Length: 336
Image (cartoon, rainbow, N blue to C red; front, side, top):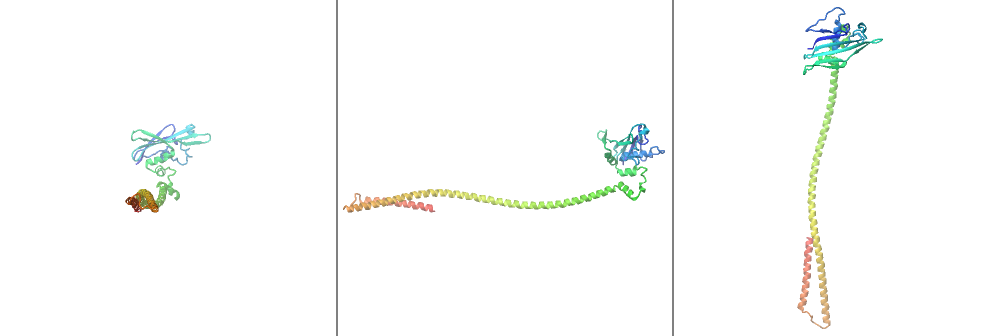
């Protein structure tokens, strides 16, 4: 539980700006007593201001909260409130709030200066002070004390001029209780949760649709992948067949070259055979002419014997027959 230990007041209301007044609070109870004007209410106002940053009512925006410069005989009065308390974990916290009230020619000017929060470093054991804006410190102190600002204002450090709020009309009373019990925050949080739930439901619906689309795309990709693999297999098979056909074409080209050589040889032999046949025919013609001349001349024999003539004729016929056989052999090879 958070406990308030001490408060220092300087230059607030009737407290002199030249002196520092320290009030120590005892546990479990501290009773503040005194005559009218002694400063009892001012102590409560200082506790409320130190913890919440709120000024007392009817102080003309703080002008009536700081000691009057005219009473002090100064053109400017500086006031200060220091509060020392321990958090629920026992950590000591020191809050310092400073104010300034200046007497202008026609009016007073009130100003809240930057506030300071001091705590003890658990590692080094040294005090460390940090300066904050008043609005930032107004949020931090209630959090450190573990009490909401509404409870500090309306219950713990309620001002005597505002202490009759439980008797107020229904609307004001409801607003007070809503602040104390954070009903408005609860309603806003509930509405935020409903909105968040609706947004998450919509996001979930969109996510499911996206997931279904991704599944369809995945299935389509798998189908295309299978088709691609099958096509690659067919391409590989076609390439192998093409390679086989190219080998066959090479073999046929080789056979064609061989057959071309044989055909050239056949043609050469055919030309030789034709020449030999022409020679044979020429010899036969010459032989007939010679026979006719011999018969016309009354000579019945040749200078060469019949045997020699037969040999010449047989040799010529054998050569022609040999060439014809070779030609038939080559023609058969080409046709095969």
